[in-house]
Image 1 (spheres, rainbow, N blue to C red):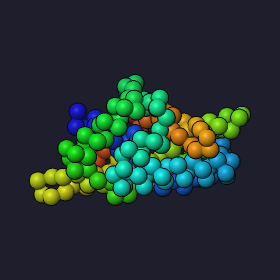
Image 2 (cartoon, rainbow, N blue to C red; image 1 turned 90 degrees about the vertical axis):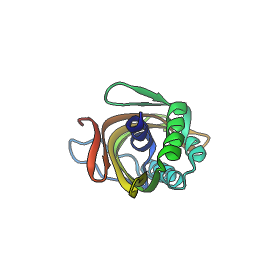
Image 3 (cartoon, rainbow, N blue to C red; image 1 turned 180 degrees about the vertical axis):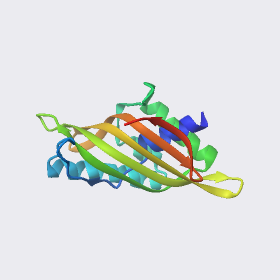
Image 4 (cartoon, rainbow, N blue to C red; image 1 turned 90 degrees about the horizontal axis):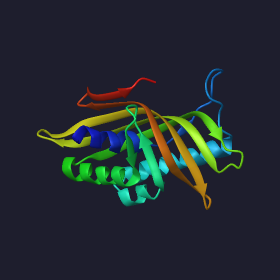
Length: 178
């Protein structure tokens, strides 16, 4: 449960300070600049909230029906994810010190209110250990869906394609292959 909680916490939700990348020939099409900027700002906001341990604020960046799917087909609801984050912060002294997201293209619905993005995310932080604190790093590749509600972009789904968690420089969990 400890590793699953970290996976939910850091792979599914921690991450941002996004920078949109231009696509290559075989890569997904780049998003229109205004949309890419708005989604990058939404990821950056999530990162800031997590770095400030504002989990209730972070929760407000997700729709009520947000769901995460991992490479094994396991689904996690918003309530489960937020509960796991709070539990891991309390139990492990988890702090997020840095996070980033790089958007690698995606698509926009015809009405402009739904965006699907391919994103690579990373997060660095610390957890309590017998020696004081230990570094933790998470890297993931995901496909995320964002919806525009009242002029605000909210994340409505996340499909994790690959996730790697490292503690003290050692891989402790790795899932997916893309």
